[in-house]
Structure formats: structure tokens, C-alpha cells
Length: 206
Image (cartoon, rainbow, N blue to C red; front, side, top):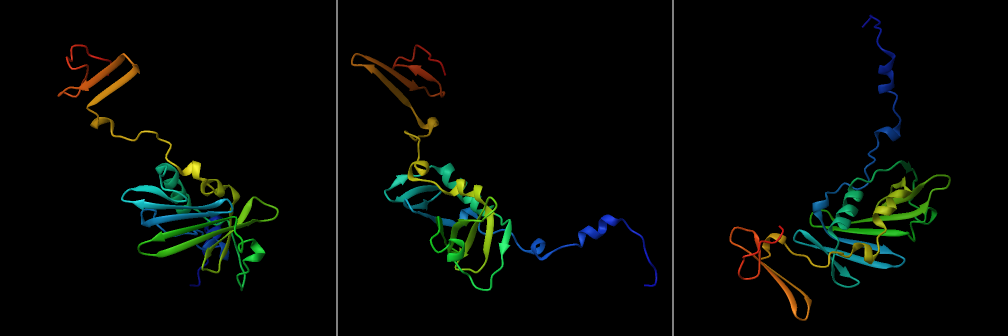
């Protein structure tokens, strides 16, 4: 149109975009509930975790019950991991970025999307970033080095640390033996309260 209009100078900043601004910075597009098996490969060894129903268990190096919060934390960090920058290259040179012998390698097995593999390589010179890529793939990302704290877990960190796992509301009787001749027995009454011994005459602290 022949008219010339005057508007706020702030509008121009909405259109001053570079290629980096338009690129998708989310590295792994996957839901936590899709993952059926999680494998962590480090120089110290390999850890394999499998989902059975709604719970996670360590399968290798030995079978143990896993710390559910730790595993969910790893999956949440993976699904929310974003690239700070991209390394544009015509040919993926894994050795150049330390990805041929990655510091950490994570494999995810899903029922719908198959296997996904994430490689963590060398530290980027001059900043606090490391190189990451999806394999097979072609894009090399730079992410904050601090994200490794969420993934670099050993066997002790991933094992369930709860000594006795049970539902408190399902317990009907509790017996405490403090000495060979001293024993305290607590039983739950029909109204859900605790009473001492079979007589239920003394009401313990709830």
C-alpha cells in the first residue's frame, strides 16, 4: 500500500532472528513412561535397569531393587535436556569431539520408538559445556557440563536404600523384642487403632 505507518521500535526485534533461534533445541523427544529399559555405560562399568510394571529394578551387574526417585530423576533430566548451541558439520567426526570413546553412553529402549542412544563426549574448550550427540544421528550439540550430575550414577546411588519396604496401613501386628525376656506386642484393633498386647487394655501412642 502507498501508506507509511509508524509503530513501536520493539516490533522489529520480533523479526530479527537467526538460524539458531528457529532450531529445535530439545535433544531427546521422548516421554518418561515410554522407557522400558535404561542402560548407563561408563568406564567403571555398565548398569542396566528395567521397568517391571510401575517400578524400576537393576538387572546388571546384579539384580537389585532400584531407587525409584533416582531413576525418575535421570529420565526427567533426559527429557528436559536442551542444547545451548549446535556444531554444524558436513560429516559427523566422533573422534574430534571425544564421542568415539564417550565419557558416558546412555541407551533407552522403548516399545514404540525402539532404541535411542545418547553419547557424552569431551568438554568444549573455553566454557562449561560438553559435546553430546544422538547415535545414530548427525547433529552434535553443546550442553551444560552440569547435566552430567543427573546421569553419572554408580550402583550405590541407584540401589534402593530403604531397608524394609511395606505399606504401613497393611500392618496388623508389631512385635518388638528388646531382650530375651522382654517383648512388646502391638495389635491393630478393628477400628484402626493400636493396642498393647492381646488384652488391648493399654492404648499406646498413635
